[in-house]
Length: 346
Image 1 (cartoon, rainbow, N blue to C red):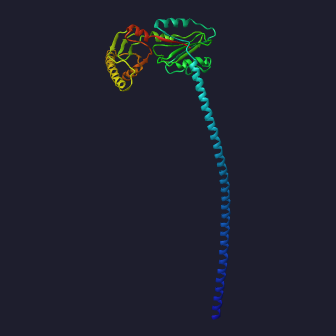
Image 2: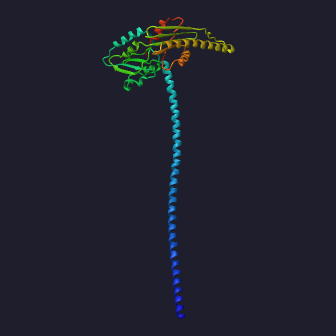
Protein backbone atom coordinates (compact mmCIF):
# COMPACT_ATOMS: atom_id res chain seq x y z
CA UNK A 1 0.00 0.00 0.00
CA UNK A 2 2.85 2.28 0.89
CA UNK A 3 4.71 1.40 -2.34
CA UNK A 4 1.69 2.25 -4.48
CA UNK A 5 1.35 5.58 -2.79
CA UNK A 6 5.01 6.31 -3.32
CA UNK A 7 4.82 5.43 -7.03
CA UNK A 8 1.74 7.60 -7.47
CA UNK A 9 3.45 10.59 -5.91
CA UNK A 10 6.52 10.04 -8.06
CA UNK A 11 4.36 9.93 -11.16
CA UNK A 12 2.62 13.18 -10.24
CA UNK A 13 5.96 14.88 -9.57
CA UNK A 14 7.21 13.75 -12.96
CA UNK A 15 4.09 15.10 -14.70
CA UNK A 16 4.34 18.38 -12.85
CA UNK A 17 8.01 18.83 -13.77
CA UNK A 18 7.31 18.04 -17.39
CA UNK A 19 4.47 20.56 -17.41
CA UNK A 20 6.75 23.24 -15.97
CA UNK A 21 9.44 22.39 -18.51
CA UNK A 22 7.01 22.57 -21.42
CA UNK A 23 5.62 25.84 -20.06
CA UNK A 24 9.11 27.31 -20.02
CA UNK A 25 9.66 26.25 -23.60
CA UNK A 26 6.32 27.87 -24.63
CA UNK A 27 7.16 31.19 -22.83
CA UNK A 28 10.51 31.37 -24.60
CA UNK A 29 8.86 31.04 -27.97
CA UNK A 30 6.47 33.84 -27.08
CA UNK A 31 9.40 36.04 -26.08
CA UNK A 32 11.19 35.24 -29.29
CA UNK A 33 8.09 36.06 -31.27
CA UNK A 34 7.73 39.35 -29.39
CA UNK A 35 11.39 40.14 -30.04
CA UNK A 36 10.95 39.40 -33.73
CA UNK A 37 7.88 41.65 -33.81
CA UNK A 38 9.75 44.47 -32.08
CA UNK A 39 12.74 44.06 -34.39
CA UNK A 40 10.42 44.24 -37.36
CA UNK A 41 8.83 47.41 -35.93
CA UNK A 42 12.28 48.91 -35.37
CA UNK A 43 13.20 48.22 -38.97
CA UNK A 44 9.96 49.84 -40.12
CA UNK A 45 10.66 52.89 -37.97
CA UNK A 46 14.20 53.11 -39.30
CA UNK A 47 12.88 52.99 -42.86
CA UNK A 48 10.31 55.68 -42.03
CA UNK A 49 13.04 57.75 -40.41
CA UNK A 50 15.25 57.42 -43.45
CA UNK A 51 12.34 58.33 -45.72
CA UNK A 52 11.60 61.38 -43.57
CA UNK A 53 15.25 62.39 -43.70
CA UNK A 54 15.25 62.05 -47.47
CA UNK A 55 12.10 64.15 -47.75
CA UNK A 56 13.54 66.73 -45.38
CA UNK A 57 16.72 66.93 -47.42
CA UNK A 58 14.66 67.41 -50.59
CA UNK A 59 12.61 70.14 -48.91
CA UNK A 60 15.77 71.85 -47.70
CA UNK A 61 17.13 71.77 -51.23
CA UNK A 62 13.83 73.14 -52.56
CA UNK A 63 13.76 75.78 -49.82
CA UNK A 64 17.28 76.88 -50.68
CA UNK A 65 16.32 76.96 -54.34
CA UNK A 66 13.17 78.94 -53.48
CA UNK A 67 15.21 81.47 -51.52
CA UNK A 68 17.61 81.75 -54.42
CA UNK A 69 14.73 82.10 -56.89
CA UNK A 70 13.05 84.69 -54.68
CA UNK A 71 16.23 86.72 -54.42
CA UNK A 72 16.65 86.55 -58.18
CA UNK A 73 13.00 87.52 -58.69
CA UNK A 74 13.38 90.47 -56.30
CA UNK A 75 16.43 91.64 -58.21
CA UNK A 76 14.54 91.41 -61.50
CA UNK A 77 11.51 93.12 -59.95
CA UNK A 78 13.62 96.00 -58.65
CA UNK A 79 15.21 96.35 -62.07
CA UNK A 80 11.76 96.49 -63.68
CA UNK A 81 10.57 99.02 -61.10
CA UNK A 82 13.53 101.26 -61.86
CA UNK A 83 12.92 100.83 -65.58
CA UNK A 84 9.20 101.59 -65.15
CA UNK A 85 9.92 104.74 -63.12
CA UNK A 86 12.43 105.86 -65.72
CA UNK A 87 10.00 105.27 -68.58
CA UNK A 88 7.17 106.96 -66.65
CA UNK A 89 9.35 109.99 -66.05
CA UNK A 90 10.34 110.11 -69.71
CA UNK A 91 6.70 109.74 -70.74
CA UNK A 92 5.59 112.56 -68.43
CA UNK A 93 8.37 114.74 -69.79
CA UNK A 94 7.32 114.01 -73.36
CA UNK A 95 3.68 114.69 -72.49
CA UNK A 96 4.55 117.96 -70.80
CA UNK A 97 6.62 119.02 -73.78
CA UNK A 98 3.95 117.97 -76.26
CA UNK A 99 1.20 119.71 -74.30
CA UNK A 100 3.33 122.82 -74.21
CA UNK A 101 3.64 122.67 -77.98
CA UNK A 102 0.02 121.70 -78.67
CA UNK A 103 -2.28 124.69 -78.82
CA UNK A 104 -5.79 125.34 -80.01
CA UNK A 105 -5.83 126.83 -83.48
CA UNK A 106 -8.33 129.34 -82.22
CA UNK A 107 -11.22 130.04 -79.84
CA UNK A 108 -14.41 132.04 -80.34
CA UNK A 109 -17.35 133.10 -78.23
CA UNK A 110 -20.55 132.68 -80.21
CA UNK A 111 -23.77 134.45 -79.31
CA UNK A 112 -27.05 132.58 -79.56
CA UNK A 113 -27.64 134.02 -83.03
CA UNK A 114 -24.07 133.27 -84.14
CA UNK A 115 -24.20 129.65 -82.97
CA UNK A 116 -27.44 129.09 -84.88
CA UNK A 117 -25.78 130.39 -88.06
CA UNK A 118 -22.77 128.17 -87.35
CA UNK A 119 -24.94 125.06 -86.94
CA UNK A 120 -26.71 125.85 -90.18
CA UNK A 121 -23.37 125.83 -91.99
CA UNK A 122 -22.33 122.58 -90.32
CA UNK A 123 -25.53 120.93 -91.53
CA UNK A 124 -24.64 121.85 -95.11
CA UNK A 125 -21.47 119.73 -95.07
CA UNK A 126 -21.74 116.46 -97.01
CA UNK A 127 -19.16 113.71 -97.42
CA UNK A 128 -20.01 110.93 -99.89
CA UNK A 129 -17.37 108.73 -98.20
CA UNK A 130 -19.16 108.99 -94.83
CA UNK A 131 -16.21 110.43 -92.93
CA UNK A 132 -17.98 113.08 -90.80
CA UNK A 133 -17.86 112.30 -87.07
CA UNK A 134 -20.21 113.84 -84.50
CA UNK A 135 -19.80 113.11 -80.77
CA UNK A 136 -21.71 114.53 -77.82
CA UNK A 137 -19.75 114.28 -74.57
CA UNK A 138 -21.42 115.11 -71.22
CA UNK A 139 -19.31 116.56 -68.43
CA UNK A 140 -16.53 114.19 -67.37
CA UNK A 141 -16.89 111.97 -70.45
CA UNK A 142 -13.94 111.14 -72.70
CA UNK A 143 -14.17 110.55 -76.42
CA UNK A 144 -12.66 107.07 -75.96
CA UNK A 145 -15.57 106.14 -73.70
CA UNK A 146 -18.24 107.05 -76.26
CA UNK A 147 -17.18 106.15 -79.79
CA UNK A 148 -15.96 102.76 -81.02
CA UNK A 149 -12.28 101.89 -80.73
CA UNK A 150 -11.94 101.58 -84.49
CA UNK A 151 -13.29 105.10 -85.08
CA UNK A 152 -11.34 106.49 -82.11
CA UNK A 153 -8.08 105.37 -83.72
CA UNK A 154 -8.96 107.38 -86.83
CA UNK A 155 -8.97 110.61 -84.81
CA UNK A 156 -5.48 112.13 -84.69
CA UNK A 157 -3.69 111.86 -81.35
CA UNK A 158 -3.05 115.62 -81.16
CA UNK A 159 -6.76 116.24 -81.59
CA UNK A 160 -7.62 113.73 -78.85
CA UNK A 161 -5.10 115.37 -76.51
CA UNK A 162 -6.52 118.83 -77.08
CA UNK A 163 -10.06 117.53 -76.66
CA UNK A 164 -9.17 115.95 -73.30
CA UNK A 165 -7.98 119.34 -72.05
CA UNK A 166 -11.52 120.67 -72.27
CA UNK A 167 -13.52 119.90 -69.14
CA UNK A 168 -16.53 122.25 -69.27
CA UNK A 169 -19.42 121.95 -66.82
CA UNK A 170 -21.87 121.59 -69.69
CA UNK A 171 -19.96 119.02 -71.74
CA UNK A 172 -19.17 119.53 -75.42
CA UNK A 173 -20.07 118.61 -78.98
CA UNK A 174 -17.21 117.38 -81.19
CA UNK A 175 -17.32 117.74 -84.98
CA UNK A 176 -14.55 116.03 -86.91
CA UNK A 177 -13.86 115.31 -90.55
CA UNK A 178 -11.65 112.24 -90.95
CA UNK A 179 -9.73 114.29 -93.55
CA UNK A 180 -9.40 117.16 -90.99
CA UNK A 181 -11.20 119.76 -93.05
CA UNK A 182 -13.38 120.25 -89.95
CA UNK A 183 -11.98 119.70 -86.47
CA UNK A 184 -13.60 121.64 -83.64
CA UNK A 185 -15.58 121.47 -80.41
CA UNK A 186 -18.57 123.48 -79.20
CA UNK A 187 -19.27 124.07 -75.50
CA UNK A 188 -22.98 124.96 -75.18
CA UNK A 189 -24.41 127.17 -72.42
CA UNK A 190 -26.58 124.34 -71.08
CA UNK A 191 -25.64 120.73 -70.24
CA UNK A 192 -25.38 117.85 -72.66
CA UNK A 193 -26.99 115.14 -70.55
CA UNK A 194 -26.32 111.93 -72.49
CA UNK A 195 -23.49 110.70 -74.76
CA UNK A 196 -24.13 110.09 -78.45
CA UNK A 197 -22.15 109.78 -81.66
CA UNK A 198 -22.41 109.00 -85.34
CA UNK A 199 -20.07 108.63 -88.30
CA UNK A 200 -21.82 109.40 -91.55
CA UNK A 201 -22.27 111.57 -94.59
CA UNK A 202 -23.25 114.66 -92.55
CA UNK A 203 -22.86 116.14 -89.07
CA UNK A 204 -25.67 115.63 -86.56
CA UNK A 205 -26.44 119.00 -84.94
CA UNK A 206 -29.96 118.12 -83.77
CA UNK A 207 -29.01 117.68 -80.11
CA UNK A 208 -27.30 121.07 -79.97
CA UNK A 209 -30.29 122.70 -81.66
CA UNK A 210 -32.58 121.11 -79.10
CA UNK A 211 -30.45 122.35 -76.19
CA UNK A 212 -30.29 125.90 -77.55
CA UNK A 213 -34.01 126.13 -78.32
CA UNK A 214 -35.23 125.03 -74.90
CA UNK A 215 -36.76 127.68 -72.61
CA UNK A 216 -34.80 127.27 -69.38
CA UNK A 217 -35.97 128.90 -66.17
CA UNK A 218 -32.58 130.14 -65.05
CA UNK A 219 -30.99 132.11 -62.26
CA UNK A 220 -27.79 134.03 -63.04
CA UNK A 221 -25.29 135.20 -60.42
CA UNK A 222 -22.24 137.29 -61.27
CA UNK A 223 -20.16 137.62 -58.12
CA UNK A 224 -17.45 140.16 -57.34
CA UNK A 225 -16.27 141.62 -54.07
CA UNK A 226 -18.35 144.75 -53.49
CA UNK A 227 -20.55 144.47 -56.59
CA UNK A 228 -22.64 141.47 -57.65
CA UNK A 229 -25.59 140.79 -59.93
CA UNK A 230 -28.56 138.43 -59.59
CA UNK A 231 -31.05 137.91 -62.39
CA UNK A 232 -33.92 135.50 -63.02
CA UNK A 233 -35.02 134.65 -66.58
CA UNK A 234 -38.16 132.50 -66.89
CA UNK A 235 -37.54 131.66 -70.56
CA UNK A 236 -33.77 132.14 -71.12
CA UNK A 237 -34.58 135.20 -73.24
CA UNK A 238 -34.95 138.15 -70.91
CA UNK A 239 -34.52 138.81 -67.20
CA UNK A 240 -37.80 139.06 -65.35
CA UNK A 241 -35.98 140.01 -62.14
CA UNK A 242 -32.68 141.88 -61.82
CA UNK A 243 -30.86 142.95 -58.71
CA UNK A 244 -27.50 144.70 -58.34
CA UNK A 245 -25.94 144.36 -54.88
CA UNK A 246 -23.31 146.90 -53.90
CA UNK A 247 -21.34 147.32 -50.70
CA UNK A 248 -18.09 148.90 -49.61
CA UNK A 249 -15.11 146.54 -49.84
CA UNK A 250 -11.54 147.75 -49.37
CA UNK A 251 -9.26 147.41 -52.38
CA UNK A 252 -6.26 145.09 -52.20
CA UNK A 253 -2.84 146.53 -51.42
CA UNK A 254 0.67 145.09 -51.36
CA UNK A 255 2.10 146.48 -48.12
CA UNK A 256 3.58 143.89 -45.80
CA UNK A 257 3.75 143.28 -42.07
CA UNK A 258 1.10 143.80 -39.42
CA UNK A 259 -0.59 146.55 -41.40
CA UNK A 260 -1.29 144.22 -44.31
CA UNK A 261 -2.62 141.44 -42.07
CA UNK A 262 -4.97 143.87 -40.36
CA UNK A 263 -6.04 145.27 -43.72
CA UNK A 264 -6.71 141.79 -45.13
CA UNK A 265 -8.79 140.90 -42.07
CA UNK A 266 -10.89 144.04 -42.51
CA UNK A 267 -11.24 143.31 -46.24
CA UNK A 268 -12.42 139.76 -45.49
CA UNK A 269 -15.01 141.18 -43.11
CA UNK A 270 -16.22 143.55 -45.85
CA UNK A 271 -16.50 140.66 -48.32
CA UNK A 272 -18.39 138.54 -45.78
CA UNK A 273 -20.82 141.42 -45.24
CA UNK A 274 -21.26 141.76 -49.02
CA UNK A 275 -21.96 138.03 -49.36
CA UNK A 276 -24.58 138.25 -46.62
CA UNK A 277 -26.39 140.88 -48.69
CA UNK A 278 -26.09 138.71 -51.82
CA UNK A 279 -27.49 135.67 -49.99
CA UNK A 280 -30.37 137.70 -48.60
CA UNK A 281 -31.35 138.79 -52.12
CA UNK A 282 -30.76 135.29 -53.50
CA UNK A 283 -33.03 133.58 -50.97
CA UNK A 284 -35.75 136.13 -51.61
CA UNK A 285 -35.64 135.49 -55.38
CA UNK A 286 -35.61 131.71 -54.81
CA UNK A 287 -38.65 132.07 -52.58
CA UNK A 288 -40.49 134.02 -55.27
CA UNK A 289 -39.49 131.60 -58.07
CA UNK A 290 -39.85 128.00 -56.95
CA UNK A 291 -39.24 126.28 -60.29
CA UNK A 292 -35.68 126.81 -61.54
CA UNK A 293 -33.95 124.59 -64.10
CA UNK A 294 -30.41 125.77 -63.47
CA UNK A 295 -28.21 128.35 -61.75
CA UNK A 296 -25.37 129.93 -63.75
CA UNK A 297 -22.48 131.25 -61.67
CA UNK A 298 -19.79 133.61 -62.93
CA UNK A 299 -17.22 135.96 -61.45
CA UNK A 300 -14.75 135.48 -58.58
CA UNK A 301 -14.07 131.74 -58.11
CA UNK A 302 -13.74 132.04 -54.32
CA UNK A 303 -17.12 133.73 -54.03
CA UNK A 304 -18.58 131.13 -56.40
CA UNK A 305 -17.32 128.41 -54.08
CA UNK A 306 -18.93 130.14 -51.11
CA UNK A 307 -22.29 130.50 -52.88
CA UNK A 308 -22.27 126.86 -53.99
CA UNK A 309 -22.22 125.80 -50.34
CA UNK A 310 -25.38 127.81 -49.65
CA UNK A 311 -27.49 126.84 -52.67
CA UNK A 312 -30.15 124.11 -52.39
CA UNK A 313 -28.85 120.67 -53.39
CA UNK A 314 -31.61 120.06 -55.92
CA UNK A 315 -30.49 122.90 -58.21
CA UNK A 316 -28.29 122.22 -61.24
CA UNK A 317 -25.29 124.54 -61.06
CA UNK A 318 -23.25 125.66 -64.06
CA UNK A 319 -20.03 127.65 -63.69
CA UNK A 320 -19.48 130.02 -66.59
CA UNK A 321 -15.98 131.51 -66.86
CA UNK A 322 -16.26 135.08 -68.08
CA UNK A 323 -14.90 138.55 -67.51
CA UNK A 324 -18.28 140.20 -66.93
CA UNK A 325 -17.96 143.43 -64.95
CA UNK A 326 -21.41 144.17 -63.60
CA UNK A 327 -20.68 147.87 -63.12
CA UNK A 328 -20.24 148.23 -66.89
CA UNK A 329 -22.73 145.68 -68.24
CA UNK A 330 -26.50 145.83 -68.53
CA UNK A 331 -28.76 142.91 -67.67
CA UNK A 332 -29.25 142.26 -71.38
CA UNK A 333 -25.48 142.09 -71.97
CA UNK A 334 -25.01 139.77 -69.00
CA UNK A 335 -27.71 137.41 -70.28
CA UNK A 336 -26.23 137.43 -73.78
CA UNK A 337 -22.81 136.55 -72.33
CA UNK A 338 -23.98 133.63 -70.18
CA UNK A 339 -26.07 132.24 -73.06
CA UNK A 340 -23.11 132.27 -75.44
CA UNK A 341 -21.35 129.13 -76.64
CA UNK A 342 -17.62 128.57 -76.84
CA UNK A 343 -15.99 127.29 -80.02
CA UNK A 344 -12.56 125.60 -80.01
CA UNK A 345 -10.60 124.97 -83.20
CA UNK A 346 -8.51 121.84 -82.56
